[in-house]
Amino acid sequence: MKLIRPFPVILFVLFSLFPRQANAQVLISLLLGDKLNTEKLEFGLVTGINRSYLSGIESAKGLNNFNLGFYFHIKMLESSYLSTGVLVKSNVGAQNMSVYSTGDDNIDEIFNNGELTKRISYFYVPVLWQQRLKARWLLEGGFQMGLRNKAKDIFEIDDGKGEATYEMDVGDLYTRFDAGIIGGIGYKLKTTPKSMSIGVNYYQGFTDIVKSGSNTVRNSSLYFYFKVPVGTGKEASVD
Figure 1 (cartoon, rainbow, N blue to C red):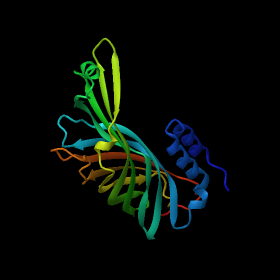
Figure 2: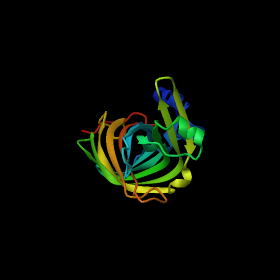
Figure 3: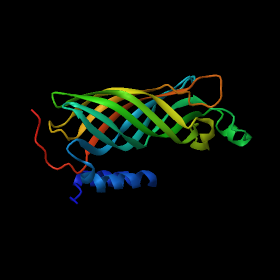
Figure 4: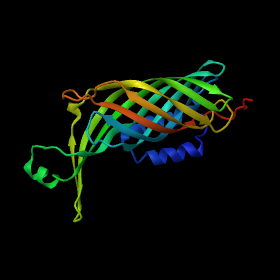
């Protein structure tokens, strides 16, 4: 097995700050990268930030999140690829919403004038058709499916005298699955078929993620990503 390159090692050290479940999958990715890459298959890590939104909730504002996962690019035609993978750490939700009654008078009194943030964790699996132009530009589109892991409502207040935070597990309020369409544009940093790339994708969910209620609530998210192939070695450039 080839030695792990310094850059993925640095990424792994950074990722060690995040939950154990994500850590295990990232470690496996780093160790097996050279085995998973073939002539027609590119494997690597993807990370970045996303700005997520919840439609159907009054006053909800966008929420910034960190995401982490791995990807596969499967060569279908000369410049066409099937792009998929898993975001093992991926949050969506919204912030700056009005608080509601928790059923605890003491908690309600503290956060009466506070704000509410909804943070929902999913394992997202995108499946996209990727078209490469001039060996560097990437146009892609397809669909994305999500499996909810957990969800929490975060009550926050800063009244000038101090800050307070209270979290509630609200996973039972949301459906287990989410699905929608996703597409965007990217750019490869080198002309080699397997190289680092940056890009932006937009996801629009079609699923009403709330189990009950008069409003239909859907996820949407703008993803800014950075992809790093693992264990690819040196390759010739594409003219």
